[in-house]
Length: 98
Image: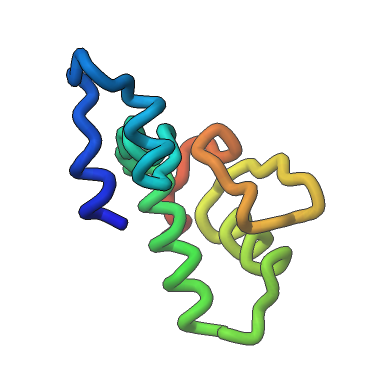
């Protein structure tokens, strides 16, 4: 797959990128995709969740968020308590209460 993506020449004047992608069986979005850097705050929250989970792996997603909010002073506004919805906008001033 990677080989086919590299074959697409965006600047080719004879054949459009759309046609090249169609011939190679590659989606144009795959060719033009630019990865976005992960927010450092999200990385920090994931690390904290991982630490809490390693201490007590029986905790579910809702309890993990509760422990995170209790021990690291943060405010969450999650719909249904789904961990996959965690974003940096959901948390304010994360700092341990030690």
